[in-house]
Figure (cartoon, one colour):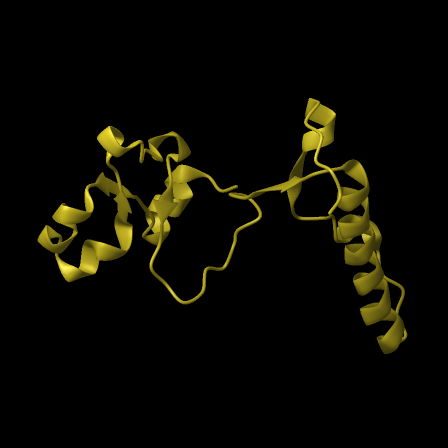
Length: 121
């Protein structure tokens, strides 16, 4: 998940909820934001509070992003891989890394810590 202010600064905007009949009324540069909204037909995704950004690639900033993972072991693997990569890079160059100088840059929310159970696929 990302910080809304950060996403806005990158060009992200909330979707536009409207009927499909209104889609053609949008300028072409806004059509990517359209989401069908017809509550009389039980089509209502407003609870999602969706945002969109129209770019080819988005570089994520660890200070503006929280990784949402299902279980603590997923978090642990990501951190272990991070430190293994640092070790391998330094080992190839013949130097020993100072792990304290390379803290894991991302922070997490672990759903199982919040009582949310996500079954494995």
